[in-house]
Structure formats: C-alpha cells, structure tokens
Image 1: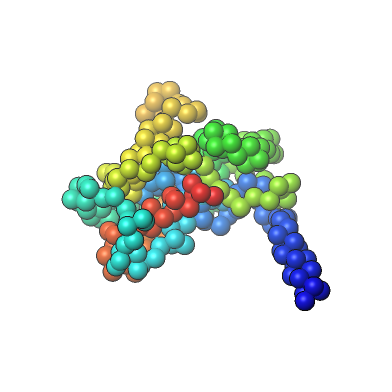
Image 2: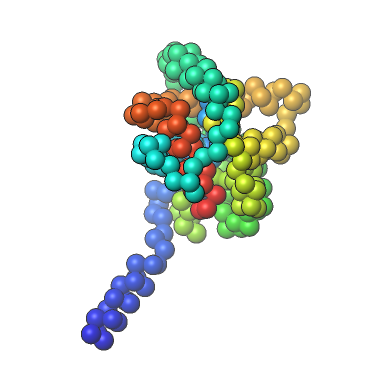
Length: 285
C-alpha cells in the first residue's frame, strides 16, 4: 500500500511539469486560429484587434475561432440560474442579430470570396502580420500588464521586437518559429478582459450594430481601447485600417460562425451562450 502511494505521488509530480513548446510553436502566437480575437470581428466582437483576442499571429485568440470550443447546444434548453445570460434587451438584440447575420452571410461572405480571387494569400498574410504587430501588440501588452500577467507582457514585447527587427517591420512573423523561454498558449488580452479581471460585472448581453455579440463591460472595453496607441491622424484612418484588417481575415471566421449558428436549434441563443462562455473562460485563464 505504501509503495502504491509513493508511485501515485511520483506520477502526479511528473504529470504536473510544464510541457515546453518545440520549435514549431510561435513565440507569442501560433497560426491556429483560436484566439486571439480579437480587433473586433466584423460582426462578433471580442473587443480586440483581430490579431488581437492573436490567435496565431494572424489573429490571433478571436472570438470566432474559440467560440466553437465553448458552445454547448444544450445550454439554451435548460439554463442554470447561476450561468444564465442576462438579456433584458432581447428585442433589440434579435433585430441586430438578424441584420448582422444578413450582412455577414449575404454581403461580406461573397465580397470576401471575390477579394481572395484578386488578392493572393501571401499578400493577405503579410497585411495581417503587420496589423497584428503594430496595432495588436500595444493593446495586448498594456492589457497584460494591467492584469499583472508580466510573463505574457514580456512575450508580447519580445515577439514585437523580433518581428519588427527581423521580419521587415512585422510583415513576416519570424517569431512564430522561435522556441519560447516560457511556455505560451496564445492568449490574447483586451480591455474587456481587463475589466473582468478587475471584478467589473459583464452586465446585460448586447448585440452591437455591425460589431455583433458583446455586453456592457466589453462595450466599455471596446471604447477604452480606442484611446490606446497607435493612433493615426486623422482619426478616421484608424477605423479604415481596422475595418480592412477585419475584412482581410473574414474567411477565417465564417466557417466557425456558420458552425455555431448552423448547428444550433436557436441560432440567436446559441451564439449568445457561446460568446458568454468564451469571454468567461478568457477572463479566468
């Protein structure tokens, strides 16, 4: 019996050791499509740059890529009172859910199909890398510091230095092939997550026109991130660049979005629950 106890203890110790990334894993983000998200996706916002919420470098932990991992179709059949999503504006939300869905599927999807024919993949990837490097990193770095995730902030900064110095100003994601000193799973931090870490409640669920799924806390985070660098002059250039960045990687989000709304008995509730579960998991990571 005593020998069995020591054997079990030894196995537990061995299994608890960190698994270090090999040469295939990026310094800060891998090309998975998880997270990332964010910037704010065209329709479903995680309040981050697309790089942002960096899934891999190419946008990196975004809502769409991760959402399917947290989606549970049974959630909307019987909701536990402790996990039920507050949705007092359901009438408004459903109207904009339908409008956003039409824009996403009937307008943006075919437009992006034509865009892919005209713009080759290497060009799209280069543009995405540059956006992730210059617009995503400062926001992720600041939010990692605000959440006291100092190791993560260090990785974000080191990734920025490597890609800027050796990747032609960030157009090539050199860091993705470097072995990190500290194991890194690709989390992306945004101000909505920061507010959640600080204890700010999510508040009611809210569907924003064009931006999509959100809540009061993430909407405040989205507004707050507008004041973080970099900022182009005139200011409307910021919106143009970020909109172009979201459209550039739209194809990476369409599949996951369609999987969620296409397999849900009630698409509106399915997406609402997927978004809420995703944001809860990102805050608790």
